[in-house]
Image (tube, rainbow, N blue to C red):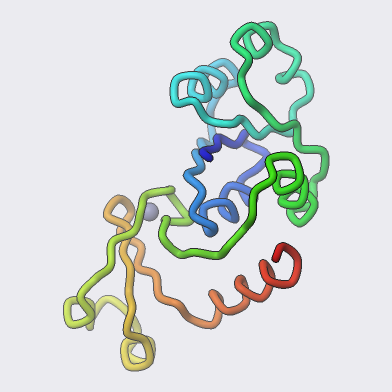
Length: 153
Ligand SMILES: [Zn+2]
């Protein structure tokens, strides 16, 4: 299941990426381009904008969409889960910043790229080939895991 989020759903798009859902988020995109992108790439459109969902182009092309009702991330996730009958499992495989699938790095190649303590205490490092961000499964990942386990398992 692949998504495209409107500009009001930046946090939601990050959380979907954390669970390895392919999710496009473009900050400065007009409504027409957003709809066109959803159509072209066959993504489910997630939007907070009721007016947008009433457009003729949406109805004529039967674009799949979810009109997100809440401003709160937890409720947004809950609505997506309930509406689309999906499960959220934290799975660091996709860049949270840019949606690119991550590559595993050889540990010896990144000695200088991460803090010494992190290098000493972790064995698995992942890199985004697009924006070059490096990920490891640190305490922030444990917190996210707790969040998803608590509310969405
Ligand atoms: Zn990236």
